[in-house]
Length: 237
Ligand code: FES
Image 1 (cartoon, helix red, strand yellow):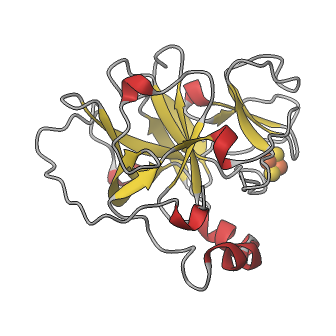
Image 2 (cartoon, protein in one colour):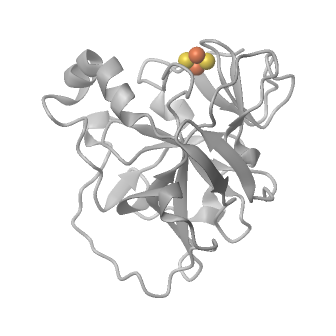
């Protein structure tokens, strides 16, 4: 899929009433709100939480046109309530969304030095079924650039014990509509590094998206694809 067309702007507005966030109220300092965006497939149809496989990660771009996020359906509901610490202070990770509370999302930009999935390959992946050598287990997000291991069931906490402390991956706040089984992204909490990302990859983002596009906020809908479709090759480590 052409990533310029990856995010669809369809101008739909949806009433907020009746939707289940499924989370306790947050301290405003813990959540940066962005556009409320419906997660859809490549044809613009809403994705259903029950249809998400647990065997791989998905990717959607949010909150900006060029910033990829992982969407992961964990095999079991994470407990949530994790107290995490980023460079902007402490925050609570709320846990998963969806009927079973298993769907989680994080920015796919490594908190260490900002590696991220690109069209031609990704150094950072979710190991759903194949054991990561670095981590010695499945169920983790690993960045092979410098071997950071993140646990999506603990709010994206960095868990490699032989590495310098690295802040958790910033989490995407998901909202779930139990009536339709649909999902929305509506903000980011933890320490986001989007400005660092835009600076670090200014040239690449200009080439891929054109002038001024990479920093545009996603509106209305974001298309979700499997990581294996988003990036041609996954580094393994
Ligand atoms: S950039 Fe990911 S581990 Fe260094």
